[in-house]
Image (cartoon, rainbow, N blue to C red):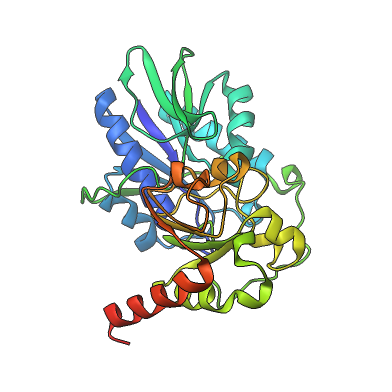
Length: 323
């Protein structure tokens, strides 16, 4: 019996989130007195698969099938379920991203398993099996007991540190019982964005709200983001006004993110916005209203006009970086 972790890849490469999942699965496996096994779907080189061993994974089940080159949630669910049954896995760990949110409910039905979604800490106990997640828009923590024989955990992004536990992971080919006719999803076109950091992947996000007053005032915010190697984001009113593209909208009705650092500039901090960024490790708020709700969620705050604070902040970062 092992803990099974699904490690998603992007064009044959793993991202930090996959290694975070591997680290988490390894620690959960230690709590259960077993080991972590990863399942990878797609054409990934053995050297890349073995890199999961640097984060404690003992075995990698590699599924290479041309029918699976296009992500199809129904088929991927069958693959992961068969892998879990083959390994006798009682705990399955998946990322709490769009892929994981599509897979977890399907796996739950197929395996008659309970789900702990958006978990951000190690289980409090394994007997009973109790997980911890944020609740009430990040203002509280909920302890959820998973009472079924098989448990599924979706891990919130950036909620667990990378723990290097080097070992030589064994790579094993796995051929589940699937064929091309099972795949219902068709890929019509691929348009890749280049030269821009995706907010869902970024370690640092610099975000602006209505306090920026106009789309014309965005230059210093973008400059700060470039200096920090950060992604840019915005609140919903900003995207609704057309100041910034909708794919930068963060919040309950936009992108749910969890960077290491979230800098909120001119954002008041409505509940819906906080719900989408509350998992950030550190929030820095800049707002002219000292009573703005964003300060309640922030670890650090500056009370001041963004038009005056931003240029000074940009110069301070330039000086720090010697630019």
